[in-house]
Length: 342
Image (tube, rainbow, N blue to C red; front, side, top):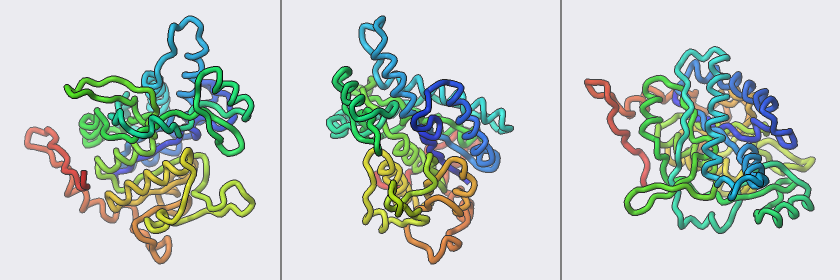
């Protein structure tokens, strides 16, 4: 089975924790342990978040008096892709994954006219009290927003149009490689009329990029792994209840916060609508149970009579494999056919 995993940045550095390398490595090792069984049994792409990490690097850059100007966000996203990708690849290998594992620094093409540039919503960096957040916003020229009971910096998060290195990702996947890519949504770039690219000040949502990857490689399942056990009704209240199954009609009737669960739901909806595949949202430690549909929140086109009525993970794998790219006589990959409207 072909699986794309969106691994949340908050699963690698929890709220309120110090952003020390040793702290993050503990979480990366746990992530690798959870993902290793998937890597052993399935074709796997891992797309990780970087909100806490890129915010930390940005704050350090802005505070460095030796710099004439801070490093731009696109460069910092590339840095976090290298760091987290290196950790994940090493820890997966240490967990016994025998397949090739490769971390790629990828670029994500965005539209310079995307309205998201005028309405920042993507949380980055640590959480602050309201007073401290407003002080830092005034000092650095940040946009800030409430994240639960705390406050954080928010930056522009334009919609991904294309992953520049998609052909390489697809090639590696077809040849048995576990691919770590699209980290932090990929370094955001725009292209001029002649195709020359340049970075832009933004952080693309990694869940949107994971959905785009999953659609493009025709994955059966999209797993969104985070630090909460499921999508919750009445989240943050004593009445909080896990929503175990949602279909597209349910999603149309519900509203979710733009900066946290909203992008995850939107990514799952995009994938399910485009492919008819299955998406799930849940806790990193529950990865295998989430894939099996026994925990977390499962999202499908229509609500089955019971969760046990969900098709087993690889029921349609053979049929879908027959539609995928075939190799030519000399082993070169042929272009993928796009099964969704542009």
